[in-house]
Each structure stands twice: as C-alpha cells, then as structure tokens.
Image 1 (tube, helix red, strand yellow):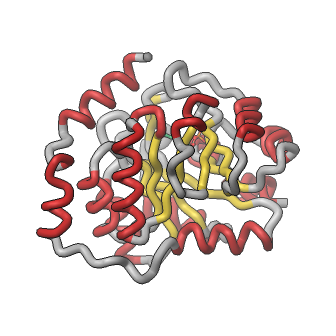
Image 2 (tube, rainbow, N blue to C red; image 1 turned 90 degrees about the horizontal axis):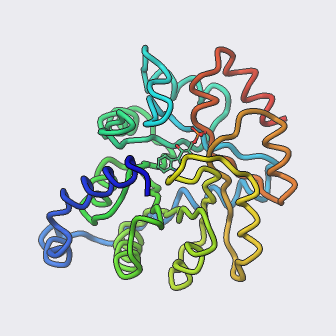
Length: 260
Ligand SMILES: O=P(O)(O)OC[C@@H](O)[C@@H](O)c1c[nH]c2ccccc12
C-alpha cells in the first residue's frame, strides 16, 4: 500500500471516536428518517434516460500527487461557473489533510444554493455521514478498499435512513465481490488505482462481473473527448471529472466539448 493511502487511513481511523457508540448516538441525536430520500440518485436516474452524457463536476483544490491546481481557489466562483455551463451534479473534495478541502465550502454552497452535491471524504465513521447530512449534501462516497464488510453494511444503513445517496467506489474485481451484500445501486469505477495512482480506463471491464442493476460512473483521469469516447464505448454515460476542469483556462469550451 502506498504511503499516502496508509497515512490517510491511519488518520481517519484514529479520529473515529464515535463508531462504537453509533446506535446510542443515533438515538441521542434523535435522527428521523429523511422523507426526501435519495434525491441525488433519483435525479441522476432521470437524467440517465434523457441525456447522452452526464458530468459530475468536481471542485478540488489539490491532490497529494499533483499538488495545488489552483492558487486562487474560490469554490463558490467555480461552482457558479459550473452552473452557468448547465452542470447539475457536483462533487466537492472535502478531505482537508491531503486534498486541502473543507466542509466549509459545502456549508457555504448549500446555504446559497439548493443543489446536488457529492461530498467526497474518506468515510470510515457514521459521524462523518451525520455531519455531511447536516451540511445538506445529498450524496456520499464509500471507498470500498478502506472499509471492511461489516462497517460497510452499517454505514449504508445509516446513510439510507438519512436519505443520502451513496456511491460505492471500486477499483478492482475483489472490491466488486465485497459489495455483493449492499443494496446501493450507484457504482463508481475509479480509473485511478489509489495505491499507485495509475490511471487505467480498461479497469472498467470489471463491470462485466456485475449481475444486478448498477448505475455506473466512470471516475478520474479523464482529460479530453478521446478519453470520454473511449469510456463511452463501454456503455457508460456518467463521468466524474476534477483536475481537467479545475485546470482549464476555457471552462465553457471544455464542458461543451465533453457534452456535445
Ligand atoms: O481529478 P480527476 O482525476 O478528474 O478525478 C476526480 C475524482 O474522480 C477523484 O478526485 C476521486 C475519485 N475518487 C476519489 C477518492 C478519494 C479522493 C479523490 C477521488
């Protein structure tokens, strides 16, 4: 395992005070079932049948491998620019130690707009889900490689009660086996191997091993239309793109080019 993943997992699990007390905490916080269930997934499903290409555009300040993408980072501005280009689905990298993200962006954005945001953190604890829900994000992501089977079932259960949509992120066949018992139908295939950071679009071939219905998102490393078309040949229409959109000087053209 590479140093980055090792470090981040250690840190996350170290901060995982509450897990043992989840059930008590749950009662204590008096959490009610959320009536507006799964709005991120529901809209994504609707768009899936209407559109040829769907972008989930990421707001990402930095990455452990590439460093800072944007020194004048202004998440609200980026968000507005995405929105101007008819983007409906957003992802915000909130992890603070390695990606220099923050939950504050979420808070700010959700206060101003009522929108569809995936809050991307390295989730290993219910308390993170609870917090994301309070900040009114409507989607979370579970990185399957860092969560064990039992914990996954538990976290899925809590997220469902809160009405949050979930993306299960996998990178290889072993991880596909691990999600067999989960009911979540959104599956993100990360083209980037988080252990060695290599991008491989042929990773998507692991979807041939999935028997039940899953809505598939191709994540990471997508730079241009050639990449997008290559992935589309595998019958995929939903793309999660960060770095390329963060770095471009011509956002309108770039998005237009991806969508048309
Ligand atoms: O910036 P990119 O290569 O377009 O990738 C976006 C997104 O897929 C990536 O940020 C991501 C996907 N899954 C993750 C898990 C943790 C951290 C980051 C990620």
